[in-house]
Length: 274
Image (tube, rainbow, N blue to C red; front, side, top):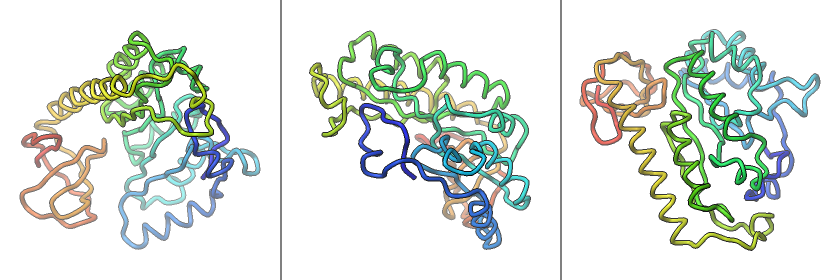
């Protein structure tokens, strides 16, 4: 919980304070209890997940935690990571991506923008090329990897050229699941005091354009799954998710919570049909 960073648009650290990590032993014990109760997938989550461990003895990294979980809970079928900051990904996490099939090939990235100047004004810790490089490396290690990403449209001072770099980033990083946020002023943050705020209608139009770019990527991803066999975790009797987090519907009810092996037959809207 909490965050040690101070991105200029974000109010979260003021509400939640600095980063606090649940100790690794407690995490492992919690996951063991969940597995004993029959849960087939666990998601690691946090405000700034890749900062995990900085306040712990020996300052372990998120990759250390992931490797420890997979080693000490061998009966856990699926481990998923929620939103991460790609610039903080450590060597062990990359090793887990490359070598641990139980770690799901799906990462949600806190990218926020595709232009270096805006990233600096946001006080982000990465540049455009850092994001592209990380995605290329993760795909090289795990070809079936899919990415989600947070992107903000209309940050103060954002020009058409700046925004175009965010649109291009969708292709350059091969992003699939976009969370697009129209910039909104948060009182008390540095960004709220920047005089050159973008017009609200422009923000709305840019957010819509990003969502359209994301929809094209989803369509491409879904089409590529036709004929493939997936292991699908059932969230309810008629809908589950692939390892890449894609929604799959079934005409025939399945056991809720089970991992079902099925062939993809069709695409319906933004879902696969198995």
